[in-house]
Image 1: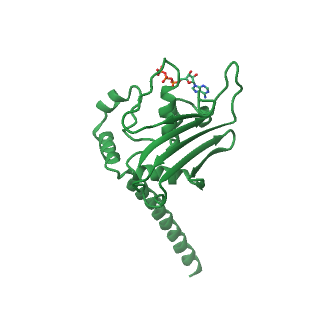
Image 2: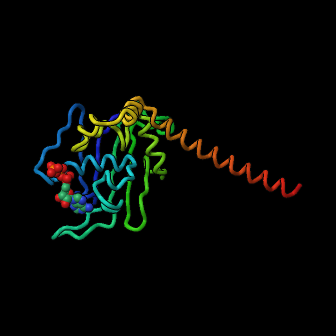
Length: 202
Ligand code: ATP
């Protein structure tokens, strides 16, 4: 699985549709301060399911929508699409039946986020799991923002372990375990209620 193209529309400073082609080898992005370099990395995090506004340098999720400029009105939605080359069929199960994966996230004011994979509606969780199983994702240690290096060096052992687990591609399993535990807890509560009802009937 290789990222091949990132397209931003109405996302932060990228008001007009903008394509970033990610070629083989190293891709560098250079430009003056404030031209939007960090916004590109945030777009990548966001399309992979990031839901913490602080990581997106905003106070609310809708802050990613182009907020307007002196000569341009604000937009009503933001969309990021990520094209993945899956010719080698390395995508996780369930997403592995085509040579290209097109992942789209769109946020509309007062409506919220919607996700699509190859034009099919999916849940945020499906996209997050897709990337977690592929050893990457919005929280991947491979995405290193400004000021993050010293944070990683000073990280506590537990946080370091998370980084290693993500690199090993098992963070998706942790999420699934957490969900299974919640279901188990729900089932136990239901059983207790059934016991109560049986007791009342006896
Ligand atoms: P530096 O090199 O200083 O870190 P940079 O190239 O990484 O800069 P970014 O931080 O990615 O630049 O971009 C910041 C720019 O994005 C600012 O001009 C800011 O006004 C603009 N911006 C951020 N959010 C929005 C938004 N919702 N609508 C419009 N513009 C936005």
